[in-house]
View 1 (cartoon, rainbow, N blue to C red):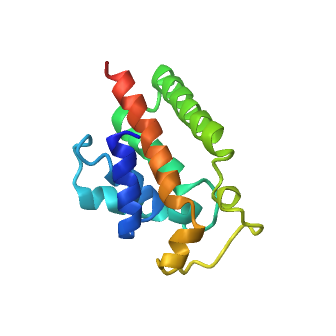
View 2 (cartoon, rainbow, N blue to C red; view 1 turned 45 degrees about the horizontal axis):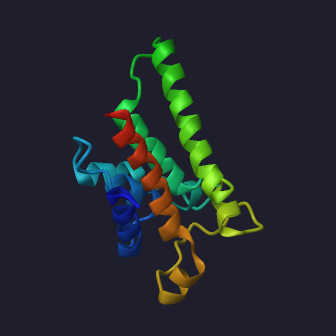
Length: 151
């Protein structure tokens, strides 16, 4: 487990959502104010606003990848292609370890949506949720990618 995985797990246990937990773990790697990072990531928790779609930890992994390696020119087909390849590889790594990149599937939920009200973070909540470990997995994957990419 790399330092980013540990940080992401700790961040989730502090009360940040999955996306915020992963993105915040990389605050020292990114030249962006922490409050801006947290606000940027705030909409993606719970599989995008608790819609239980793409896992928030996976979204956080993608946000970090975009901030580190993303493209910005609309006609940069080579840059866009390279980045989408990177994103698909990161998703495949996460899916290989966890079986899915979809929040509701990772949580074993039958319904597609849930209430927009966040669950209370109690001891019971943490006992039944894999989210801290999932945040660690996502941060570990992108952390390893960064360490290997920049060698």
